[in-house]
Length: 362
Image (cartoon, rainbow, N blue to C red; front, top):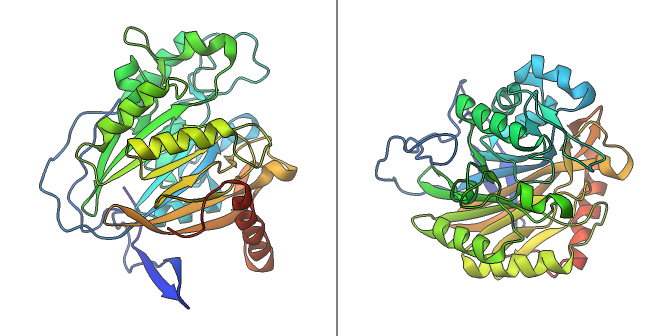
């Protein structure tokens, strides 16, 4: 994992997240931490060691990402494929996005879908080059090219050794958490989707005997996944695809699922799908974000071009501060906002919390 140390300061009683660059180059995101212990579809356990004293860390989240249309050409230059927003991802200790596409050059388009997305395996190289450390493919485009596309996606994940959650050769693999230790913090990440086309639910949902996506529609299986992730973890993150397109307030089913996930042991619940940002905040001391909007998305325009990076400060297993860094998508790429425009968008974003039932502070 690449990046630079993130410094947190308190100003006038309000915790602010400040990314400060260290001297030198090539610094590890997990600087000062033990080598990460990872598991999941991307590979087996590595370098298990006793964890050192836990340090505060910054986790960054971006929204829905694909490489459709004119964005495909950006894969030729992986280090710049995500544009200037990558600097924010690289400075975080851990960064995650939703990869809303099948990773295949073949397969048969899913029947009855207006839009089907796919990208070549170089998408993983682009994510890594932009500072992304883990992604979820549990969404309503993760199997757009059906079983052959799933096989290709899983093969690409194995070859790239890129951490991916929410997809697998069977249910155990699809619901299995990605585990990584960052600066002494043992993190477990589960991915799942609450959004699936009705006629594709059976074909796309992973089971004990069939590959596919982790479905959040199966609530008991989700609770089991979170409880399993909780074992041996300091921080449990659940990344969900949920909500209703273009609706800026969470649906009752999102709010109910969030409560259930927190009760099962989730510390952070984040997600997307609506193509517009939703509000975020705290529920019983745990952080919930109902939708981060588009991130790298070829068709974004108007309200669907509102974007940003969510930064969460985690200390001793708890989210102690959060910050939204607004961006505006231009040409499919999120461009960080500055000055008065950023302040106005941040104020608007904070107002989205009003319909969530969440609080602004832990």
